Image (tube, rainbow, N blue to C red; front, side, top):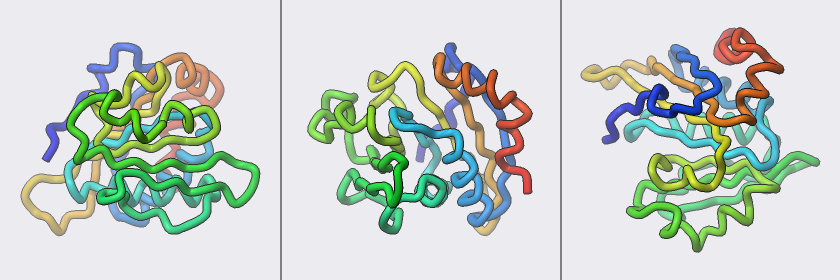
Length: 182
């Protein structure tokens, strides 16, 4: 289990917004809507305890980006590359849960080489991949404590760096909040 991380700790956050997601289908839809904002070179860091919905969100990102192959958890293979079906970027989906160190330990994955042409999504990447890019999208997924049947999640999306400050100017914070609206 992972302690929730406050986006306020990201001192360079360009924006942060909290959304309530009430089902796995809505989590996947959030991923599809976030994908519209993504472009080659973007780093997306996902945080949340086991079963929070990180892979479900990534599945939606893959659908929104139009990539090949079923997006499943890369827990045991560490990373999966999903090539684009069209002209968009590839999706590199990484699960850093079993990796102990920082970026040095992840060097064999060549994420720095893949980043310019891909969207890289890293589950459990806090403290491990921040040095890949000054600009990143952080998504923290929190679920209710106790009743494990509750599918409601609180998702905090925060953009860090100049790239996301620019996106906030372009789309406006209201546009970013609309990500989860029907």
